Image 1 (tube, rainbow, N blue to C red):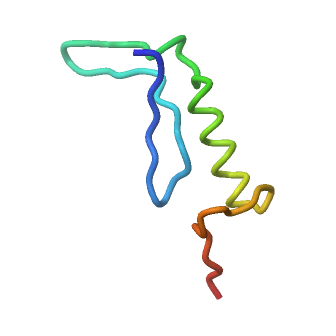
Image 2: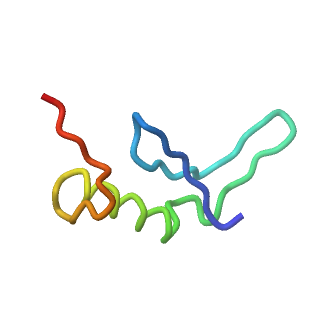
Length: 63
């Protein structure tokens, strides 16, 4: 596995560095965020903070 991440409505994009269970322990990639994960996170937060255009109409102002 080269890289993995988690995302959801209450979080941004969170890199997964390690998967652990009683019968395995796997380091994902080199243990740090992968290039795609870092790019996705930066792209999404740029839209959220107004540093990039919201081309898909994702953002809604909550008053």
